[in-house]
Length: 451
Image 1: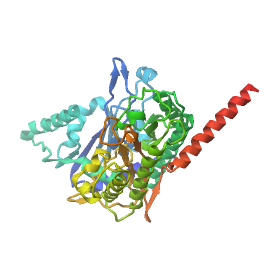
Image 2 (image 1 turned 180 degrees about the vertical axis):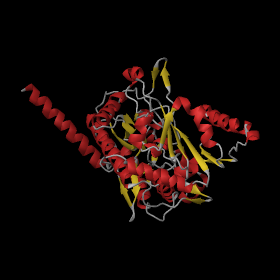
Image 3 (image 1 turned 180 degrees about the horizontal axis):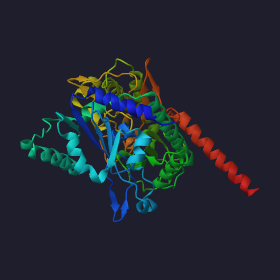
């Protein structure tokens, strides 16, 4: 079950309760994007718009008018068009969105230039996310300027623009029970996809063939798209943090790093695992892997209500730096190496990010000059990584070209935290055992086919 009609209504009511008196909020959905000539990318609604409506069609605008006697929830959308619906699918139309979404009023999107200025006129403030869509920004300003042109006839333009994102993003940071169910399902599907990729991996495969295993499992389970372009980096390619070419051959003796998660009913998962192409870690690979795992476990142990956002990162830097010194990759006192930032040669990103409708979800990490305090209902990733360039001659040859990242999705609970993506093994022994079982099954199947 997804997000209910009642929950969408509660979200709109909550937002309107935070808005200043006599104000209006304008929330457009995303704009369809051309892929090439007559082909468009699959459409995905703007997350803020989707969060407040659940409406997935393009060319739509939400308007909220707290206190309006004729109804506070207004939606502009495409009209029904039998000829176009033959090509592009059924449209809800204004009447349909009133029935299905509970809109108080709905109008054709083609009439927005005539209707919306009248809804803005007389409102003191406009809540709008300026700067995200330059074309729509100009339309909003044109509507306001039309009102200003009629001041002599008694028109009253708004006196202030306020950032809608400031309110909405804080709302989205705290996940409801229904949202947590969807994120948990996205994590379960994504975990099974990682298991499938581990089981399928053999030397000589192409990175994109492993990517295909992920996409197959996503789609088979009802998650029609990845939440972001999947990273499948074998060997040196894993040292590129956002590697998405996925077009190299996987070699025996190398590690492969997979960073992939599906989007399920509008909510994302984000999981990373690193494992040996051949099914067994070499001693240097195992040593580095166990360090990254120790870093992640130490960071997760800090996650609980009342802790602050940066606490996990601070712990990860300390444990990583101490481990790098112990392995001989850094020399000196850990405290001094942390102070100088020497560890960033190998661990150059932060520990994680918020997760939700967007894979890098909204929400401030600092409130004023303080790190945000963690509270129940927040979901975040924990993803320490260790990357040693193949050209780094400062380190012993056995370490060069090794890259390891381990990432899980974590829910802050009343008592601590819950790892939502725990369905994928992440100790060296468990990974090797899973890959060995898969290969034994393949051998058994091959022998049966010979009989």
